[in-house]
Amino acid sequence: MKFLHMADVHLGCEPDGRTEWAQERKRELWETFRDSVEDAGRMKADLVLIAGDLFHHTPDVEQLREVNYLLGSYPGVCFALIAGNHDCCSPGSAWEDFDFAPNVAFLGSPRTECIRFPSLSCEVYGFSYDRSRITQPRYDSLRPAKNDLFHILLAHGGDRDHIPIDPRSLDGSGFDYIALGHIHKPTVVIDGKALYAGALSPIDAGDEGPHGYLMCETHGRAVEAHFVKKARREYVSCEVKADESDTVFSIRDRVQAAIDIRGRENIYRVTISGQRDPLVRFDTELVRSAGMILDVRDESVPAFNLDELVDRFRGRLIEYYIAGFDRESPDPVEKKALEYGLEALLYGRKGPA
Figure 1 (cartoon, rainbow, N blue to C red):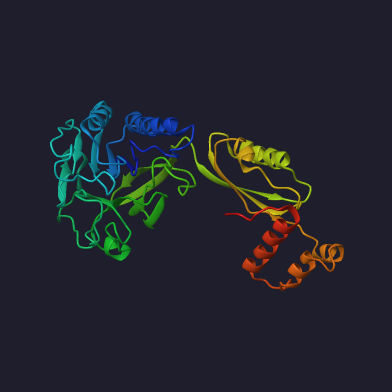
Figure 2: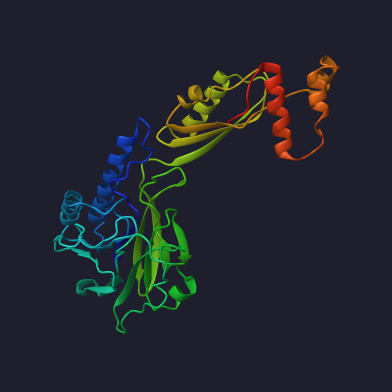
């Protein structure tokens, strides 16, 4: 059996909501999902598992119709899905009365259900969230029926507020494969048995690294899983180290060069570190114009020559200010206070708010 495992698609989310590319990102989530479903059809997958949070919020009828059209367009592929904490199947929601295509199995009850696919000699177990927060470790006690079928558990959670998961309990549960959702980074919990596919696409700056789905194939009871990168973009942290020769344009050029290497399609968070000329302050908005940059943090420090300042301002306030600090202290707070105070005294500038 060949099956595709995806999770945390978050359709309807608008990542990077205050940026000029936010609407494009919102559309990309749908396009990446559609492309992944097409992959399943093209590769002749038997089954697609969607382990919760297909939507960013509990869906309305229009969203369900769009998804149902996509899944129903591949009648030779079976689909099984659950609702997670973001798109929970709460009482009265559009999930409850929606009629999915014949090849789509929605395990929408808050109680464990089992869907059997006789042509695949397979059973899929799972339940949906009926609220956004479930603190009970509900997967620890789940066990499949005692038969010769291949047993899959669709599960969503893994932290204190969203169904805590004990890997030892999963390992002894009797399921042949456990398709996990909720954690956005692809993660192996039990090798070849319990895996997080990660988010299909990244939706916030904490989702660094590649994203996509898992393509799995059974060999008896064993499962061989391969990660397939599908997201069109990644979030990337980029650090540029300044020195005393740098200007804002030289920093911007170096950021732009780093982006050209890592990919202009990606979204960046930039940190400027190192020591700069005390007379220079980097214009972070100008640096942001170098690419798709969420924010720029200037953590560079002025390269003050304290001995030179003491000699230059001997008998004046700046000498006394410097003398009030332990210049050998490793305390970063004390160092920052010295730097910000000197900038204010020398140039009338304030430290960061």
